Amino acid sequence: MKNNKTVILFLIKFFGTYALLFLLYSFYLSKNQNEVTFYSCDSVTEVVAIQSNFLINCFGYNSEIIQSNNELSYQVIIDKKPIARVIEGCNSVSIIILFIAFIVAFSGKFKQTLLFIVVGSLLIYAINVFRIAVITVALYKFPEYEYVLHDIVFPALIYGLTFMLWIVWVTKFSKQR
Image (cartoon, rainbow, N blue to C red; front, side, top):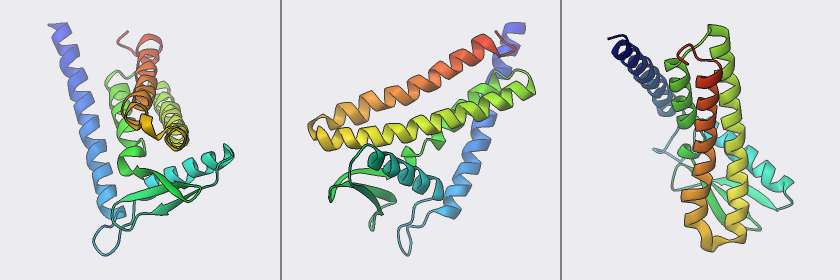
């Protein structure tokens, strides 16, 4: 019976945290995106696009970003050629919400849990910005590999990192080891 109680508590904490954060994020998006009078992405997506563009320029490419006129996205342009789009789903917030829900569901000491959530979220965010910059350059150089790069390799990196952080959390810090 104790095992069932542990599983049920995990599920309640996981789905409760996920639902709360998802609702808060949905509310944020409803107030910070515009597609009625003109297209304007939320500020998190904008910052991710700006930081990714900065990295692409640091890699030695002449790139710029432009808010799309016909969708909620930023066009990433290298040498005046549109290469990629940064949309809300690319900003890593959804995966950070999933990460946080799992950590809360397997919570440890409050201070450790909070610190791991902050550090893990920042790491996921930073790796995501790097991922967008690298995939954009890779698409510029190897456009024929778009499917493999965008749909397989790069999602595997961000989800793999999240999974590794979960493993570290459960084996090192969680009360439910």
